[in-house]
Image (cartoon, helix red, strand yellow):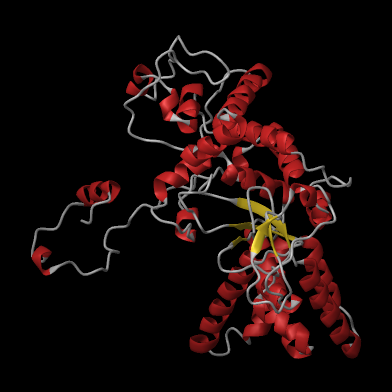
Length: 453
């Protein structure tokens, strides 16, 4: 049902009760209608969807539904306590003190029984911190909770806490989601097919990627990164079967948000917005992107151009040379001399034409990259259109921004975890017992090499 930057790729035909209903591609005329909605095969209750995607601690959903006032009071207090403790770590002394007071109030008298209450205090404090880190409260949300607790009238306080909890649940329901197809067949044009879709229920073949906060601009960058040719090339080296599982997604070389500059957000975000916002269903996403106009008209040629510009732009962000980009598009479009050392940016001087083909392309290279994409393009357009559009976009970017200057992303990575001597508890095979112990330097070396010491 999904395709790249397209949540209206296919629709079901037939009645809801028809077990033989099948999908069909959405027609071009339907895609051009911003009011058109695809028909799902199954319908689920809205509450069932909210229970899965609302960015609140899961017990709060059932407490609000049951109007459990004591439970809501405890949950909001725990959440607020975690917020204050975590903000206290950032240097806010007042919030740190408030967080300590909340934990002490919920854990009982800290010093009444050192063996029980102290452990209870530490456990609760860690739990509150972890819950708020998973579901961070904004300062304005924390103020709303605190104001509700500050209500003097007991009956009114219960009502205020219930209303506050219900408001938090409603405000933290995402209006759109990021989903992808976990079917990575060798007959598809891409291995990774990701898009933004409106709030809805999805099946197990369309997993979702969620974040603790809803930031449309960062999500747009993330989506474009995953859909880029460079990233798809990486996926094709990792995915060994027809299923694109989450353990593959976690291994991808996705650029972190802090790797992007203001110009990057503007260039990428504007193109993702135009690709995604073709239906009124995605209006909430457009508004969060800062755009309040009508949906963009679905134009196949325009969309191909926008995707090509994103592909070329991400090739630059990853520090690729033009020759390396040509290799990703199709290694058989390079000469044997160019393929000897793909890290050497030097290109064959005979490369010419819109596809930058050398006079004598290789005839012996054993591999391929985007065979299906190339074949589909040649069948429909009489040329490998994607390659031409991407290389033309690369040329325009060089004129606008100059040659590629590789960025150093290493400083953005978290520091490596250094193993501490004496903390390895796994048992060694019998054949290794009784051997002389290795020095710490030797252990470090084997760990770096990925070999079990």
